[in-house]
Length: 112
Image 1 (spheres, rainbow, N blue to C red):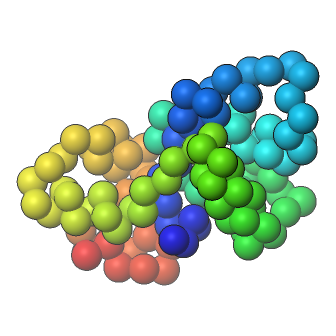
Image 2 (tube, rainbow, N blue to C red):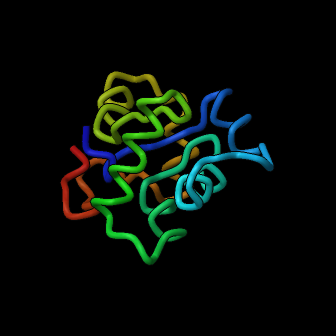
């Protein structure tokens, strides 16, 4: 899955790991956990780690997902749900600017 086109959120385990003062997670992983909230776009996380490439951040996110600390869903999948009439969650993302209107360009890709 391409993490750069994903919406992320912490699992219960991710919330607990992010709150632990004695966490053994590397600092970049902790920064990611701190930045991921209910529905967080990859670009928001990337902005918190300007010293890392997008490819490295995507790898970190894949690691965190593999160990159950975050979950991700692709934006295009959310748009497909929207097209089917299931608007839950998409209205808030669109208002924040994370999801384009159908036919608009977002991140160099068509939102259709």
